[in-house]
Amino acid sequence: MSKGLKIGLTTLGIALLLLFIDPALSLVPLALFLLLLLAAPFMYRFGFFLPVISRGRSGQPIVALTFDDGPDPVTTPLLLERLAAHHAPATFFVTGRRAAAHPELIQAILAAGHTIGNHSYNHDTLAAFKGPRRILSEIAETQRLLTRLGVTPLLFRPPVGITYPGLKKVLYRLGLTAVTFSCRARDGGNRSIGRLAARILRRVRADDIIMLHDSRPQRRRHLSHWLAEIDRILAGIAQKGLAIRPLAEAIGQPVDRRS
Image 1 (cartoon, rainbow, N blue to C red):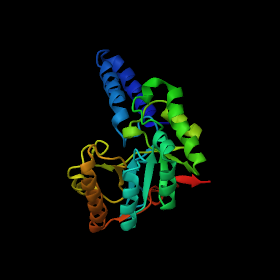
Image 2 (cartoon, rainbow, N blue to C red):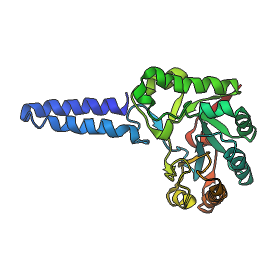
Image 3 (cartoon, rainbow, N blue to C red):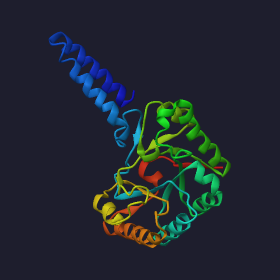
Image 4 (cartoon, helix red, strand yellow):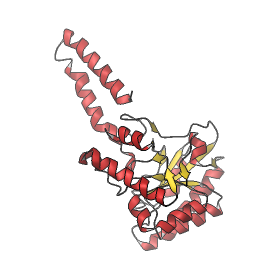
């Protein structure tokens, strides 16, 4: 039973009890539940509509790095170089559209020893409002594409971490687990890279799942600054006494399956 269903049943019970005391009071918990329904999709760690993994559970001083929205022909190769220089494993939550356009980058990510997750096909944050068929299509098409490229994701990250009714059924059908994050810089998909490292390093704690982006900054001249910020993050994590380990190790389950 999801948290949403449990809270809904509890709310209904409270409303029924209040109905016998004062009918007007019974509307209060129902109104609060309605507000919660509106806010729940954006509560990326709450798991209101379905179980969600939002942080590691190793109990060790480790963190997991994840990068969303790639692969990108400009940033991905440079990012792979930085990760190799710091001996840092990462998970790339890729979109089907970008993977289809750059299959060689999927192979490069895998060859470098990193893992890959499903991040929908078009990164459509409004998919929830377009019906269950659209939700299934967005995720299943990416699964099929990546499987043809030699890797089958076992984890799905909703775009922007937004969850919604119907997602649980789709993920169960496809054998996927929802994973969000517990530490992010709110960089707007690399549109806001100023003090990116400072924002991450100020928040990061043991067992965090860090969410960053594998997408080019809005202006080409900002690319070198973004790379410098990535270097600061990778070095700063070690300076805080934390080790960057694979996401699979942090959450205790595999990220993908290779064919």
